[in-house]
Each structure stands twice: as C-alpha cells, then as structure tokens.
Image (cartoon, rainbow, N blue to C red; front, top):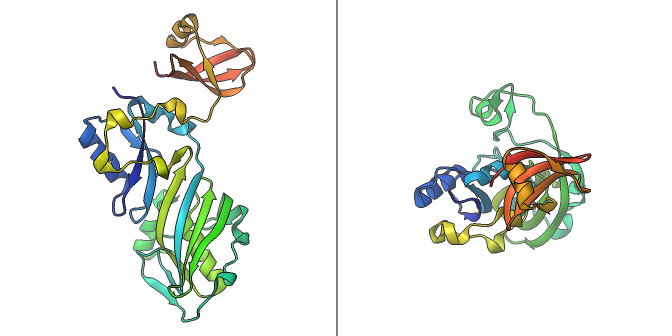
Length: 278
C-alpha cells in the first residue's frame, strides 16, 4: 500500500471530497483523505494523505496562506461571489481607504452564516436555508500576516495576501473589511497558496497525477523532531514497547532507513509509541 502525501492543486468548481473521489478512482487506492476543506469556488493547495498517512493528519502544521481577491461596493449573504447581494454602494474607494491593521494578530471573528460550523448539532448553513435565526459565537483566530498586494481602482478590487491559523474564514475578513469602510465587500476569488509545508509552487494538477512519482515522504512534511532508531529499538517499537529517552520532549517522529516508523511521545525517561507505521 502506498504511503505518503500528495500536494494537489484543487481547481475551481470541485469540492475537496470530489478531489478525493477522483484520486481514489485514478489510483485504485481507497484509503485516501484530505487534510482540510477548501470551498468549491476556491482553488489552490489541497494536501492529500494516501494509505496510512491519513493517520498523520493531526500532526501536520495547520497554518494557511491565501491570496484573496476582494470586490468592494457590495455585500452578499455568503460573503462571497456565490451569494445574493444584500447591500450595494456606488461610493468609490482608493487603496488608502483599505486599513488591514485591524486584522493583525489574534482577533475574534464571526463566521459566515453559510458555513459548516455546527450550533446545537446543526450546521449554520442549514439554519440559513431554513430562514431561521441562530446566535453565532465569535471564534478566536490568528492572522500572522496580512498585506495589500494590489488594488484596481477601476474594478474596485483588491488582492490581499493572508497568512493565518486554522479555522480562519477569509470570507469574513472580506465582509468585515467592507463593513468597516462602509461600502460593503465580498470575496470573488480565493487561492490557497500554502498549507503547512505544502506550497502552491510544488502542487500538481489532477490530470497530471502520477501517484507513485508524486508521492511525498511524510518525513518531509512533518514539523516534529526526528529520532533515528536502531534495529533493536525497531523491534520494540513494532511491539508497542517504549524505548529509552535521550533528551526529547513532546511528540517526536521515530525513523528507520529514511522511513517513518512511528509517532511517539517523549515523557521523562521513556519514549512511548502512539502510532506505528512500519
């Protein structure tokens, strides 16, 4: 069974689940999963786990980077191009009106009503489709970097680069930005340029996939300390037995012959196996 990651460039119009379905059909491998949903209208980096690598999702870096195109002059129900307009303004703005400093650092953000977040066991978009009111709680997210890359004054469109933590809604940033300026705004294009160590420059299109040639060794993508084990330690690990700790702490990757053997937890004088792969 192949074991590793694929750095897929998800095209516009497909869901993340669609991408997984296509890969299962092309590779004949059932055990495939993605690391995080990307909206159908969005495109870009979609890390995909193949084989036992699906068990490594929780250990991947969660930080994301996006290039967002924001349209000023109108707001929509979904905060993006797919929603119905709720507000329209004829007022024109300039690049100087776009203040992004308010989004820097740790902020509280209200997710869009058209999102999959659950409230009382029900997804928010289900409430929205039924026309029901529901109290939405703000979520704390971290915006590590946000900068204006360009502004087209004629089209009233801005390209904004955003590096953020998992769970950040770029649609909400676009909406809030329009609200703060007073002219309304919504997202018209979104490219995920990075997800953890997966970068857009190294991504591959679905129609050019070669599962064997494009498979990435998990050791290249895990941002955890690595410990090379010997044959004696390897035998213990395969039986779920702890090995002696030599100065490590927290989660670590145990390797042998440039392959991942296990994810383990280094605690006091022992390294205890959590998940075995080899």
